[in-house]
Image 1: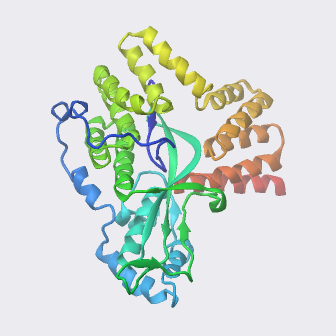
Image 2: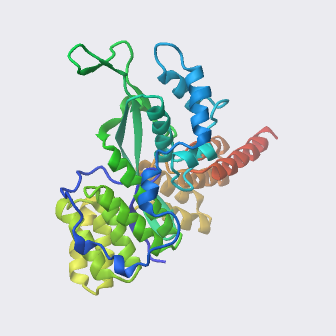
Image 3: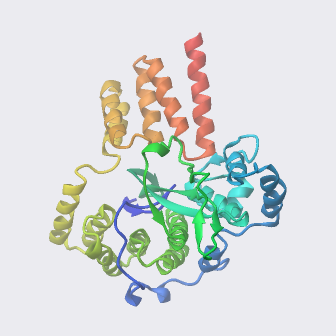
Length: 391
């Protein structure tokens, strides 16, 4: 299956680029007549339900969060519940992007899902919330024949606002803003962030679901989620890029080109859109134009994602473990949090008899694993490796 580069949100979220300057979605970019409306909860309703609390969550907020909050700063009760394994017991899991209720039910989610759940409780408790886009190095995953570039979001529980005699508000000065972040291994002190509007976060959620559905082969359903994302936030380039990939995978290359041009006019250095434009023009048989975009892409991204990793896998197949080790290490210099690469580097070290280094990278693979299931698999491999070292 031909791989396409798809910008999505954290656990999937897209690139650190300026937003599109578009107050509305150009009507010609939407193709409702080509995609039958699916059954089930419409994405527009799902957007409204992103922060909705279930009765169980209402009870938890009242009996646990309010009851355990220390006097003077009720935010601490929520933060203790989020990070204390004996309380909510949350796990980082990127299987799918959940809304607040689903994340609470499963006690798991990717960073966007857990941010949504935290915001839902904070709103219920009257805490001011600030969403943040976090500038992180591009990280890629491969799912269903797609390359997905991931970004990151978190939130701030702001200092409480209090009334003044003039009727305005100010923040209390005795408590600092508290950042809540769920990315494994995140270093809050070095993060560069920018405020993110709530409707943009909602659009990212919708776009995530579109990308996930597309990776599962559900292109028709993916269209309606991507459509809802661009409608929710017409300035969010990632959702338009997803829409373009949906069109291309549905055999609508001219329509994909139109959408991708919409992105590239505003963001000529958007590597996801450039990659998809190359594929689109190739599908249209316009090789010369494709080479122009490919040249622009190569200047911005000299090496394709996973190129070193794939070379490492080939070297492993030949039994050349030293060469494989070099390729995997090179890929990690580009993607230091990529769990799959850490695992294969651990395997190369193991074949070379470097058990201590192998254990180190298995630890890294587990720590950066996007799902509970893979965390458990890596833990089992780690235990077997420790047993080998003991004996």
